[in-house]
Amino acid sequence: MFASAALQKNNENLRRLHIMDATVDVLNMTLFWGSSLESLAVTDGRVARVVRFSNTSLPNLKCLNLSNNHITEVDSGFAQEMPNLIHLDLSNNNITDFSFELPQNGSNSSDSNFWLDISSKLHKLAMK
Image 1 (cartoon, rainbow, N blue to C red):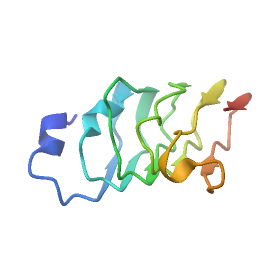
Image 2 (cartoon, rainbow, N blue to C red):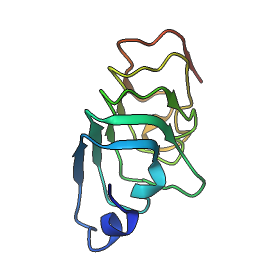
Image 3 (cartoon, one colour):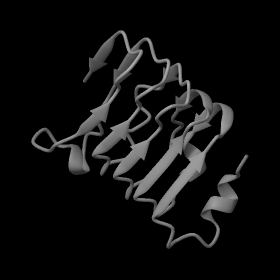
């Protein structure tokens, strides 16, 4: 599909990226580590799980759209290294159990606004 080296190399000016029709078992947010992305969309594909691994930093990311991917599982801490994330769209997926931890610094302090769309097919929600 795509490689992290290709995304990172010579892409310091890349601010927005939209990937459509991707098919992966696991969307590892490490693929985008160290990038200058402010907006990332991976939509209309087949992604089973979204995970975070240690040292995955996306300090500039404000908007993450993972809608319409048939996602069944989201790592509850995957946004921890996205301190400026204010918009998360997980709509139209197959998530049946969802627990999500807001980043503890940056734009997501207790007095900031955070937009989350988990509409459709979601049965259970827990946010910390």
